[in-house]
Length: 347
Image (tube, rainbow, N blue to C red; front, side):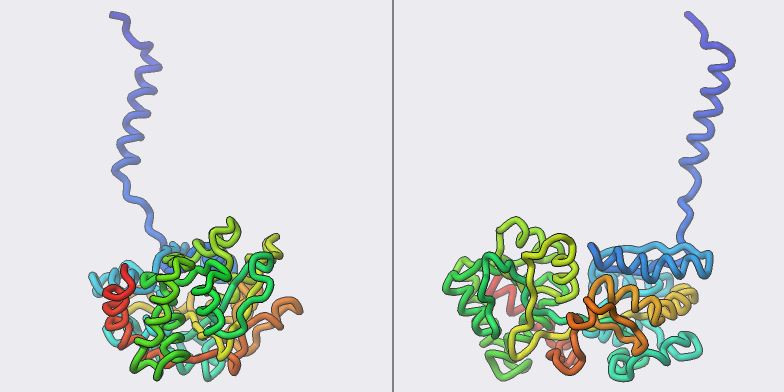
């Protein structure tokens, strides 16, 4: 039998030893773990908040994607040693996190830039967080396929049922459905949030027509609209405008009457999470960070000192023009709405 050259054998032995040693070493954890939504939202979040924080502090940040209720359940499974330090969500999910005791109060001493947040926005956090921006959940559409887009929500529903267009609407698993669809249609068609059945009846009408597709994640409507699978979709204003500017001039956006539901993006410090979370939230509250974020995603910022570009300024949602539904009521009624949806419309 031919023996291996001694040097080759030694090199092989060293290589195997290093491989085994590397396999045994634990992966270095980041200093801070935060959450984010995917797509363009994540990219802007990293550029405007994560990278400046890492540069200022020399600390590393791990960004995980998902949905607010998924993150809340992960934190709730191990509240003494939570896998997340700073959580992004909506106001209604923030209410749930606060009621479950999973997040900490925030103060000006911990987050000096809180003083720059608009008082109306700051109030939504109830002392346990603050919005960094908000957008409206209106209609994104193809200008070619829908040259005369609906000016009201009832026109949108009736046009979908009549087959004037194929529409995309959020399914029950999507983050905006309870507030932006069920709550909205309950308000437009019924007696408000105490009786949303008339609104659910309209969703069933659209489904029965065969002219609607339900989506569960934010990139699906963009892909479907560009491919021609849908002609119009309920969608966030900032994401729609960002796609319009990304070499897709055919995409348009409007807020049908009586208005599009406003969605503030809430940020909260997780209880028992790293104290670095407060420093990161200070970057989230800063005028520089929010100016960067708002101009990239074209959302209305919560910091009152934010500067918008000439292009973005007329597009961002206005505090007094949006439809503001009571978030605490929505958070309490959502489980019931989900159960009714699953029985009447399907999963």
